Length: 312
Image 1: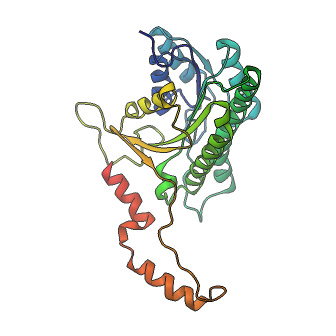
Image 2: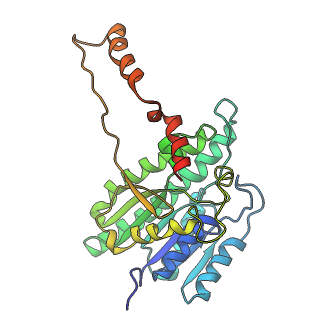
């Protein structure tokens, strides 16, 4: 019996630990040959010496289970190293079919205290890292499509966050990067659809070294699978990477603990029209102030974030 990803090849970035590791293992379990990318720095802020260890260990784990895997330890936020990553998949497996972008770091600080480097480094790894690999994979698929004279197989799964959806007071850099990833994903989905390629984003909630502070007060159960285990996220990535998800494109999905939620695009909540050629300050005050005064507290961004964490 064939596996859903048999004959396909994948690149998973940030796959040496946490979410990326479980995603790489799941793609391999479903039959894909996987290039496991991880820069290997030990600090979740991107600090420390780069190491091949984490990527090599995951690749070895896949091979031990009978799968095909290679390790790559480059920095995906560097365009030339990202180019080498995509080239490795194409040269070793003949083509690239699936790209899962997961690499990221944290440098948390309140917006009034954040340094320029803390802002730039997080935007660089998350947003530029996603762009670099997406750009190179997209060029690969476009070239293949032109040669084939029609659509080819391509899947992109990007990693956003509920920090973008609900706000995160101490993570303006991270929230901005994750919001940018959603914009990148929807733009890519529109641009590549004619080539047979889909692009989707997930907002995973999982207990990893990146989120150890967020979930510090939520202890793992004594037995059974932790509701915040990364293993709850990996099956959705496997599905989105598969032929079964051919009609899923430009979507944002929240996933954790046995739950998947499809997020709607922003909708107009209310509309107000001026009674004259343009609004005046007084007219806007008379229309908008009562509207916001009537909104229940749980609709505010801060309260939404608290509620989301409690429900998790």
